[in-house]
Length: 114
Length: 110
Image 1 (cartoon, rainbow over the protein chains, first blue to last red):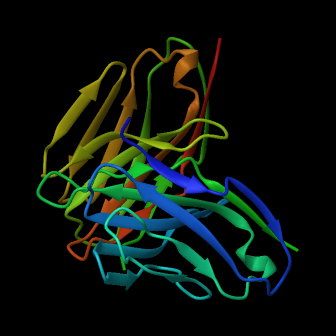
Image 2: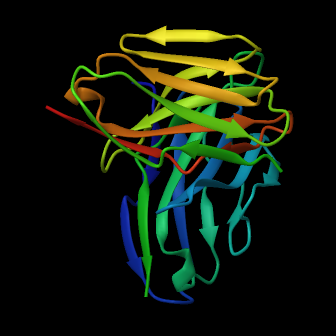
């Protein structure tokens, strides 16, 4: 089944404790991206990647890192999480090209930073 | 930076009625998307609109795009309870960044 898989789905952590949220897709998509969803703010793009070793900042990259060492994986790294990073995070992927870029989303990862 | 505004933010409508959700965006956008999110779930794609005048329909939902007015609409015809969800529009630019609206929470009342 074509899908985007995120882990963990739920995580409670404490301020400053590094964490990684993994994202993997099995559709051979070139494009992958991360979003955070907060009430009243919709989804905001954190980082995106057009292909292996190519990453760019989205709208709200501060406090986050990403890497794209393999085409299928795009982990989101919080080096020193803070409470304002408590949010619902979505990874998404798509093909690139005219009429494409229709995002397939993962199930979401709910992160709480205490 | 592309800004996307949706209205209304909340919509409560009776079954069988028609209504329209509006999505305004601030600058030129290559393409306009509509996504649906059920409570506690992820987002699923509904439509992508690529050119001025584009219209797409699926069941009771119809989306259109007017690039001159920088406006997209999502029209709901004869609403049914299964359409209760949050609907997001999103604009994309040539840099492959995406900008989402704040979402419209739709509740269809029997």
